[in-house]
Image 1 (cartoon, rainbow, N blue to C red):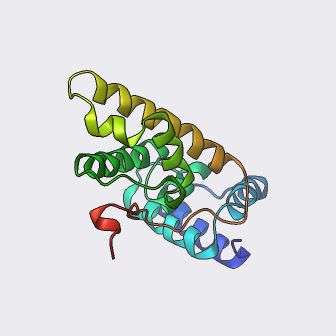
Image 2: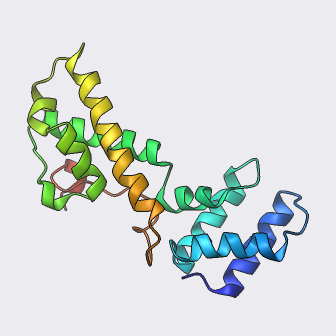
Length: 167
């Protein structure tokens, strides 16, 4: 849940940054309604700062979600594909019950053993496409359903069973 004071302060800063005329109450209410069911106060503040420093145009509500989670669904799918690929090539098969739901969906469509044995020319691109498509579907469903909060921001999270996931 995003506190009203935090929301108002961050949106005011963004309006100044983007030379945006004052938003109507209705527009601000729509942004708040969408974001408060998906982000915590801290996540929203983090996302607003990323938007403030990196974006060129006024952000959509979904852009705040992307910023809070470390990238768009497509970017996260590609990053996780690279992590899965490294793990598979090293023979480190990930346990499905220990990975996030979107990675689990990707690995259901493109199993680790197939990735491990795939040839580079044909099978690996097909598996990548299947992984990214399944991941994207699962993550899109997750983001479109309002719930108390999404996963923590800055998605440099490591996948269990990968070198970066070993503590």
